[in-house]
Length: 119
Image (cartoon, rainbow, N blue to C red; front, side, top):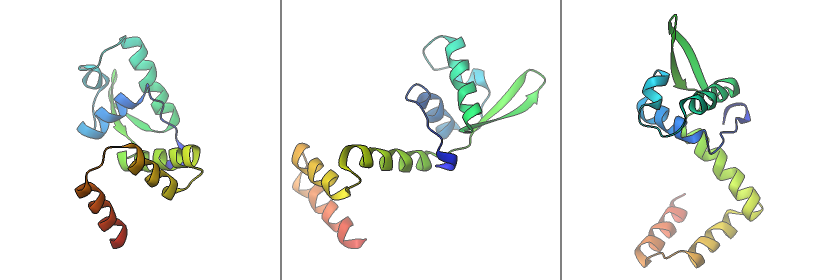
């Protein structure tokens, strides 16, 4: 992820909306969100300050917000962080744990094997 930007769990709903819908004004971002508008504005401003979201002035009182971090960059960063924290960076340990602890059908397991063999 660009510049090691950390996106807090509380900020993630805003990012998901921007990833899904693209460039929006703050009222457009918040229209289907629950919570205090002041808190939501603070979360959006934090994302701008961190560099996860860009703000471009549209009119004198309106800004357009765009995700500066892609969803794939976020997922890759979180995956690497989780893998390091929970499994000491070992994908093997993670996959073995997943196969042992989750209900995986033989078909899903075969798909995993096929993916591993391909690449």
